[in-house]
Image (cartoon, rainbow over all chains, first blue to last red; front, side, top):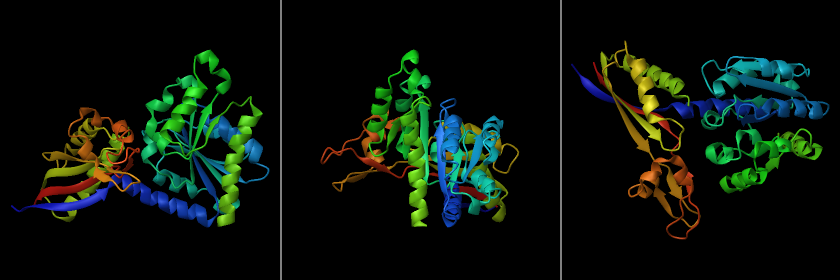
Length: 223
Length: 126
């Protein structure tokens, strides 16, 4: 009987990062801006995507990867707008990972698109540890989750590039303070833009659209 | 979180390395777990224990080493996160690493690293 220790050193989380880097190279090669839209269940991720497609669809060619645990309702809603939509079912998992996104990328003709919107699974915890190859990480929370939702999930705000506090029009009805939520995000991550939005407030929605378009234009110039 | 999926990755990797080394049994599996991941150690242990049943690793000891982030400051101060934990039990809450002030200049410290989930080694019997 021979016993010995084998050093392995394999990092299962970094393995995902490597696939994410590969996805990112593929996207850059085709000058496609990838936006990872993360957020709580029911925070308005799908609606924000729909509105962005309607507003930006004339100027940019958009495709969507819609992640869901088992259903494809979101993908169905988005596909109605006439853009390429790839539903990705994560099965048991509570987040998209780079491998699933890499597989979905194979079904999209990247040469034909400018912007890829990736709707992550509704969850404020698990997507944090998984890079997908995106250029921009957006976190969406809404007032209906309670105005302490930001402080309860510090990591996602620390690891995002843009934060959206959505459904501000109903804040009063659910006893939430958007000022508090905005302040909490700035405390956690002073470096990122924070948008307080509502689909009924055109100016706030335009901020969302122009964020996507400015990043897409910047990427096109640099590629 | 996603402990089950990560545990599956870990066990697949462990069994594959064990197989390449003609192992009859795996006696222990040593993992490094970053303090800043969202992985829950107890849940990970439960998932691993479930997954090793009926494998050559069924008797394996599961050993977890905590990996602390490095706490760094613009002023040049740098210290392993563990340094701050010796006297403070609340440092088990990962948020605590974001509220630390530099003992030299008082600015907020930046946490670097500590996001690992690494299979460090396995002990096998051939």
